[in-house]
Length: 219
Image 1 (cartoon, helix red, strand yellow):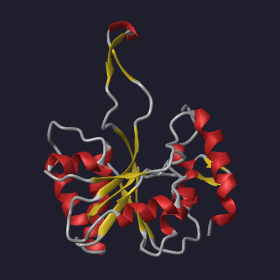
Image 2 (image 1 turned 90 degrees about the horizontal axis):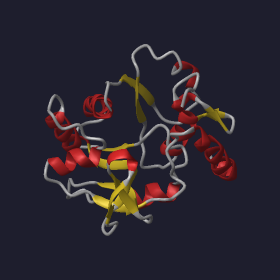
Image 3 (image 1 turned 30 degrees about the horizontal axis):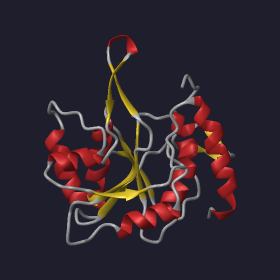
Image 4 (image 1 turned 180 degrees about the horizontal axis):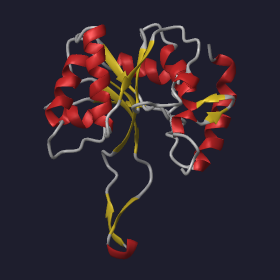
C-alpha cells in the first residue's frame, strides 16, 4: 500500500485498525483474551495499546502467516491450556460483526476437532489466466467459497497441524488448509460481505464508512 506504517496501524475512523479489530474480537463473553503476533522490535505496537477489558498479549511473529499463528498458539497452549479453542483472525479485518462470531461458535462441537471458518460462497464468474493475462478457461464456481476469518479450532489440534507443515514444502495460506492436510474437514459458516480485509488504499474509505455506521454499538 506504500503506507508510512504497516496496514494494521493505519488510523481509520479515529483509531488504529488493529484497535478496532481487537475491540470487536474481545467483546463477546466467550472470548477470554487475545494474543497478537507482531514483528520483532515493532515500534508501533506500544503506541497502539488501549484500555482493553481483557488481557492482550503480544508474541513475536514469523516470516510467514502460519509461523506467526504457530507462535501464538504455543503461547496459548502454555498460558490457557491446549484444550482451549482459538479464534484466529486477521488484524486488518476490523469490520467483523458479533453475529458472525456467534454463528462461528455455534457451528463447532466440543466433541469434534474439525473446527470451522467464516466464508462467502463465490458469486462472480472466475477466469483462469494464461500467458499475457488472456483467459485460458472459465472455472466453475460451484461449491467454491472465499475463506474469511476468524477461523476457530482447538489449540491442541491446530498447533499439531501447523507444526506438521513448518519446515516442509507446503506453504499453507490459512489455518483451515493446515487442518485439511491433517485430515480434518472444517465447517464453512456464512460470513458477512462487510468483513473485508484491508489490502488496497481504496479499502480504507469503505472500512471507515462501515465502522462509522456501527460505531455507537462498540464498547
